[in-house]
Image 1 (cartoon, one colour):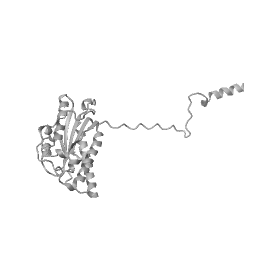
Image 2 (cartoon, helix red, strand yellow):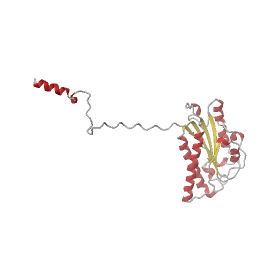
Image 3 (tube, rainbow, N blue to C red):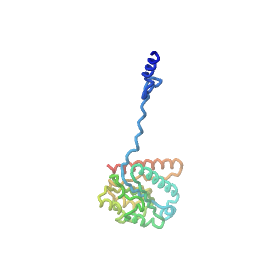
Image 4 (cartoon, rainbow, N blue to C red):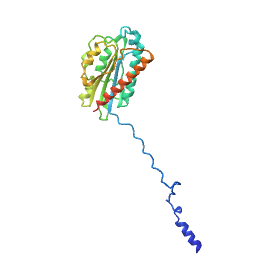
Amino acid sequence: MRRAGLLLLLALLPGCYEGWTPPSQSGTPAPPSPPSPPGPPAKALGYLLFEPITMAANAIQSDTCFPATGIRTFRSNEWTERISQLTTALGNIASTLETVPIDVDASDCTTLATVQAAAVNSTPWGSDPSPESDTSGKPLIHLKAVFWESQPATTPPAAVTATDWAAWQALEAAGRSAKSLTYFVLSDGSSGYFTTWQNAQPPAQTMSGTPINQVDPTSAGITARDSTVASDTAALVAWVQGQAQ
């Protein structure tokens, strides 16, 4: 009888039935798991076509295109740095970034037929994704960015000075939320083709960077150039992002 009672008591103890969890040794419950970190912020823009316009390597080495021989390396590195930083930063705010460089060869630096051809090109993205494929519902941006020294004293054709180039005209005609922007960094203070183009643009859709006219190839000068490029990049990207508002 006593043996049966002992067995019954053991059966009733909490450690002997399924589903019982022993307390922690400290007597306090374990803390909850930390929340998952938030995902990346939503990108403000849909499709962004970025067309940087500058001299090809052979034009930079041409006395006709770039007569300031002593600053060729400095300026070439500046333009490369600007375009590289912008490509990275713009990719952070656009759902799709398509970069299509417009490099002007030495044979074309006085007539700029390459720029006119880009202006009338209805499919500058080629076989890459087109803005028509964007389904985000966010603005579709075309950013033309000019980096130049010693601009030619010629007049740009109407196709170039048009606020919207051919591809973006077609998007707007199709009812898409499309906007064209133009950015200029004209280094030597001369006037001509690009200043005429710049003056023809709506102020609200045009921005200028900081020209580095005092070229200093020393370590201190390069540090100053890097700072200017970084500051210009941040300002331009903030401006482009604001176009989504």
